[in-house]
Length: 182
Image (cartoon, rainbow, N blue to C red):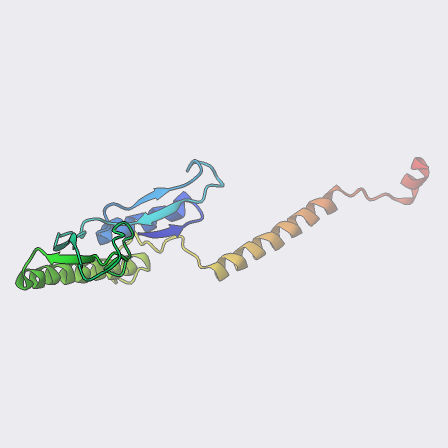
C-alpha cells in the first residue's frame, strides 16, 4: 500500500485515476475529516490485492522429545527450534521440491507483473506515457518550490492591493479643512 497525502480532493482525483488505470483496482481516497471540508487533506491509498499469493508448503510438527536431556520442563518453548526440556521443533515439508519450484515461478511472475504496474502508475502519474492524452494526470500539479513561489507572489500582490485600498480611503485635507476641524 502506498499512501499519498494531497492538498485537496481536486489534487487527489488525478492520482486515483492514474492508480486505477495502472491496475491498482482497490485504490481509494480517504480522510480523517469530511472530504467536503476545505481543510481536509485527502489521502490516496494505492493498493491492490489482485496479485496476492498464498500456498501452504510446510508445517511445524509436534516437538520430538530428546530423551538425552536431564531437564523435564516441557513448557518453555524457545524460538531457536528447541526448549530447555530438550524438545526440538520439527518442520515438515508438505510439497515436493518440484512443486516448490513451480510456486516460486508463479511468485516471481507476480512480482514482475507488480513491477510493471508500478512503472505504468509512474508513467501515468508523471505524464510520461507520451500518448498525448488530454486528460493528463499532470493537470493542475505543481511541486513544492513552484507552490511556494506562487503563494509568495499572491501574498505580495494581496499586500499591494490592501495598501492601494488604504490610500483610496485617506482623506486629503486642505488648509481650510484643518481650520474647520480645529
